[in-house]
Image (tube, rainbow over all chains, first blue to last red; front, top):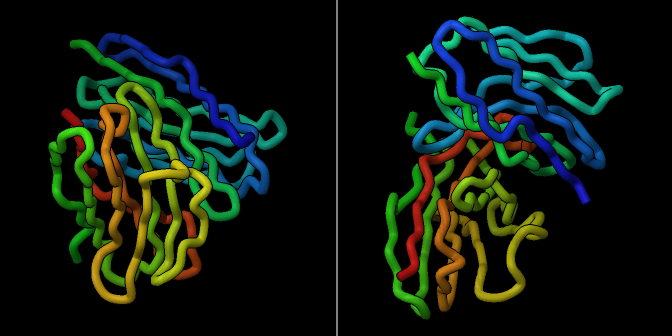
Length: 109
Length: 114
């Protein structure tokens, strides 16, 4: 059965800290890996990773895919309270996204 | 260009009633996906539809749940004879023709069964 596992489940940090969120996947017909941020409502798209070893960056967020290890990490540097959210990792196979349970990040001032 | 529109935002139903959740995809998008999110859990795939076709319903419960995406109008997720365990947030996403990975999610419908 296809599955995506995220760790840690929950993370509590202070503003300014750097965090690393982990995602591993076992998915048949893997195409790409996506990261989303979910606050109160709909998940919002962060990154899509298709090629191994190529880092994608957006401001303080960056992510990389390791196809050999079937994993990805999401880094957030200099965290802010506005980064508090659930971060979801999803693997795309032939026709759908398979989500992990998410990492809940709480950033305190 | 409106995003993915879901309605209602909140829906309360008594056990045994029917729930109908609507999703209008983004303009130009012809692929619709429904996901369910239970409290403290990730999004679980339910069904993938194109206009007038169900492509993959491997995540749909075998009974009481059905989905459609007619030629005209929104996609509908229908839950008959709701039970307390159906209480969840139901998210719809759409993507362009070709079904690429560019999912856009709606804001979801939060169903509460009392």
